[in-house]
Length: 579
Ligand SMILES: NC(=O)C1=CN([C@@H]2O[C@H](COP(=O)(O)OP(=O)(O)OC[C@H]3O[C@@H](n4cnc5c(N)ncnc54)[C@H](OP(=O)(O)O)[C@@H]3O)[C@@H](O)[C@H]2O)C=CC1
Ligand SMILES: CC(C)CCC[C@@H](C)[C@H]1CC=C2C3=C(CC[C@@]21C)[C@@]1(C)CC[C@H](O)C(C)(C)[C@@H]1CC3
Image (cartoon, rainbow, N blue to C red; front, side, top):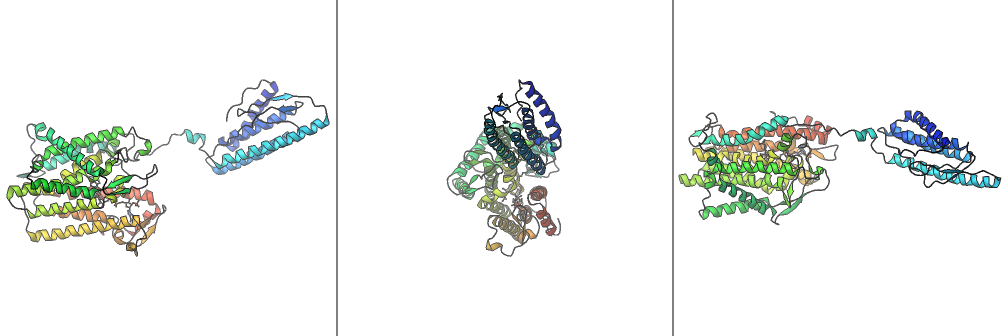
C-alpha cells in the first residue's frame, strides 16, 4: 500500500500516528495480506474521529483511494478479512454521516485535504448532511466493490512472490559425472567396437592396434566435405514441398509445431540414387574403404552441432527449453540438450537428424557393403543380404510411419543435445551396421535352412513391433476407431485413456519386445562365433530397459493412480512372465 504523504497539521499528524498503531494492532490477527486493507479502513475511521473535533470540513478530494487486498495463501482467510474490511468500510461511512463530516481519501497516496468553515444556519447543516449522505454512500459502495474485486482476482502473496521458484533438479544417466563420461565413452565405443571388427582380428578382447599416423588414418578433408554434402542433400530433400505436413503434440509453451513428412520419399530417392551410382560404376565402395574417416567426420560434426545447439539455446525464449536439460550444470545440459525443438527455417533439427542422415545413412552403408562383398567375392552373400534387407525394412517402416515419432519422448520431452546428435549421426549408422560389416569383414556365410528360422524370427519381431505401435498410435489419434473395439481401456485423470488389453495387455512395452526380437534376428545372421556382432542387441537391451524406466516415471506423473492400476493389471514390463 502506498504510504500517505506527511501531514502538516498537528491534528492530522496525531491522527495518522494513532491510525497507524491502531491499524497495526487490529490487523495483526488477519495476517499480512489483509493488513493493508485494515490499515486503510482504520485510517479512514480515525480521520473521521478526529474530524469531529474540528468544527466542519469540506472535502476537496478527487477520487477515493484504492484499497488493495493481496491474496492470502489461504483463500478463506482472505474472504473473512476482506469481508471484515468491507463491513468496516460500511461502519466508517456510518460514522461519517452521524458526525456530519466529509470524509474522503484524496489521491491514491491517501492524501486528504480539508478546509475549516464555521457553521451558521440549520438549513446549511441540512444540505451538508444530505451531501454527506450521498458522498458517504458513494464511498461505501466504492470501497466494497474494490475489496470484493480484490478477492475475485487473488494474486500471489508477497512472501510467495519473493521466494525464488525452487526447481528440484532431477538427473538421469548418473548426473553430470555420468554425462561427462558418456561424452568421451560413446565415441570411444564406436571406434573401439569397429576397430575390433576387422579382417582376421574380430575380438573385443584383443586391443586393436592404432595406426602410426592417427590423424591421416582417421581424418580426411575430402571425406568430411562429402559428409557435409550428404547432410545438405538430406536437408534439401527434407524441405522439398512434397509429402504431408502434420502437427506435433501440443507444446507446453502453447500451440503445435508443423512437420513436413516426406521421409519415405527421401529414402526412396536416396536408394534410387545409390542404385544409379552403382549402375554407372561410381566408386561408392570408397565409403567402406574410408569407413573410419567417415566415422570421424560424423563424430566431429555431431560435436560441432551439439556445441552450436548448446550456445544457441541461450539466445532463445526460455519457453522453448526442455525441462530435462536445464539443470544449470553445463556438462549435463550439453549432454541432454537444452532446447526442445531447435529449428532453422522450416527444418526441425531434432526431427530431421533423428530420421534422415543417420538412419538413411545406415542403410546406404549396408547396401554399399553388399556391393563391396559382391565385388570382392563375385557372389551375393545370402546372410549379408538378409541382414541388410531386415535393416532396410526397419528404416523404411520408421520413415513410412514418420509422424509416429512425434509422440516419442525424444521429441516431446528431451532437448536436442549431444546424446541425440551423436546418437543419430555417429552411433546409429556406424554401430547399427555392425552385423553387415562383420559379415563383409569375416566373409562368414550361413546355409538357407539357418536363414529361414531367422527370417521367421525377424518377421515375428516386426509384427509385434508394428502392430503394437500402430495400435497405440491409432488409439491416441482416434480412440473410437472400430479396429480398437473390444480392447479394454482405463480412464486417467488427464482425460486420456490407457490401453489395458490388446498388445498393451501382454506387457507394458510390447513394442520394445518386438524391437528386441528383431535386433536378435539381425545378429543371428552372423552365427555364434563372435560376440562383436551381438553388440547391438546387448546395448539395445540396456537402452530399452533404461528407457522403459524413464517412461514409466513420466507416465506415473502424467497418469497418476490410473498408471499404478495399469501396472498392477499388466505386471510385466517388456518380457511377459520374465521381466
Ligand atoms: N532402434 C532404436 O535405437 C530405438 C528404437 N526405439 C523404438 O521406438 C519406439 C517408440 O519408443 P518410445 O517412444 O520409447 O516408447 P512408446 O512408443 O512406448 O511411447 C511411450 C508412450 O506411450 C504412451 N503409452 C504407454 N503405455 C500406454 C498404454 N498402455 N496405452 C496407451 N498409451 C500408452 C505413453 O504416452 P501418452 O500416454 O502420453 O500417450 C508413453 O509415454 C519403440 O518401438 C521402440 O522400440 C526406441 C529407442 C531406440
Ligand atoms: C548412445 C546413447 C546413450 C543413446 C542414443 C540413443 C539414440 C541412438 C536413439 C534414441 C531414440 C532413437 C530412436 C530411433 C533410432 C535410435 C535413437 C535415435 C528410431 C528412429 C529408430 C527407428 C524406429 O522405428 C523409431 C521408432 C522411429 C526410432 C525412434 C527412436
